[in-house]
Image 1 (cartoon, rainbow, N blue to C red):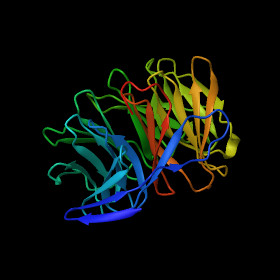
Image 2 (cartoon, rainbow, N blue to C red; image 1 turned 90 degrees about the horizontal axis):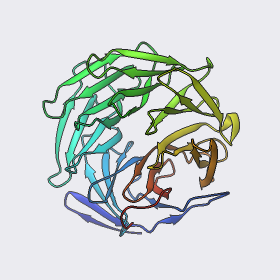
Image 3 (cartoon, rainbow, N blue to C red; image 1 turned 135 degrees about the vertical axis):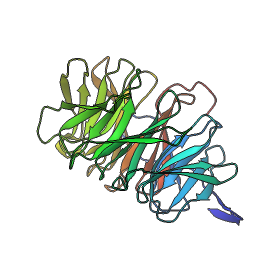
Image 4 (spheres, rainbow, N blue to C red; image 1 turned 45 degrees about the vertical axis):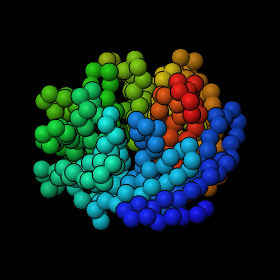
Length: 334
C-alpha cells in the first residue's frame, strides 16, 4: 500500500483482499481502509464511488472501487459519524452520533451544512434513510427518539418512543411509512408520517431484540433478532410474526441486513463463527446462500447497502475493511 498526502485530501491505493468463503457462496471482495477509525455503513454515490463513515476517526471516506483509491474528507471533531446516505446530486448526509446533528457534505467543495437537533436531549442520530421526496427519517438510539428532517427548510420533527426503547434500524415501505427496530424492547414501531404518531407491534418472545430491518416489495417487514438468533417476518396488516432460525443457531448474533432487487433477504451473523452472510428466499422459504466473510469473531458487519445497478451488496467490517458481495445480476458494468 502506498499513500500520497495532498492538501485537504489523503489518497491511498489498496488492492481488494480475498475473503474466506464456505458453502453455497457469492463472490466477495474487501478493501483495507488506510485511515482506520472503524469504517462502516458504505453507500454508493450516483457516479459509482462508495462513501462510508469513519465512526471512531471523525471522517467521511470515499472508495473508487475501479482503482481501489481512497479519499478522506475531514468533518467536525467529536462527530463520531454513525451512518450516511447520498442524494441524487451526490451530497452526503451523515449522522453525528456524538454531537447531536445531521451533517451534509458536498464532496465537490468539501462544504459542510449542519442540522442540529431542536431538542438538546436528542444527542445521538443513529441511522438515516430517505423518503420519496428526498427528506430524511432517522433514529436516535440512546435518546429514544425517531426524527424527520426536511432537507430544504432544515426543519426537524421528533417523536420520543419511551424510555429504554432504543430505536435502531429504520426502513420505509412502498407507501413511505417508516418501520423501526425498538432494540431495547421486543417491539417494532411504525410512524405515521403526517402526525408522527407511533404504533408498535409485539414480537412473540419477551427476549426478542430486533436490531436491523428490511422491507420487501410486498411491504412485509423482515428483521434480525440479535439475542435469539432468528430471522423474523412481520406482516403489518395482520400483525402476525414468523420466526426462522439462523443457520448458526441461538449464538449467531444476526446483525446487518438488506434485501436485493429480487425480493430476497440478506442477513449477517456476527457470532463466534465470524462474519457470515446468508441469503434467504421468501418465495422458497429457505436459506439458499452462505458466505464466510471473515473468520475472526470480531469481524462484525453492522449495516449493508444494496446497489441495484451493479447487483452488489456493500458493507463495512470491524476488521477495518469495506467489502462487497455480488448477490444479484448487475444492470450496468461493475
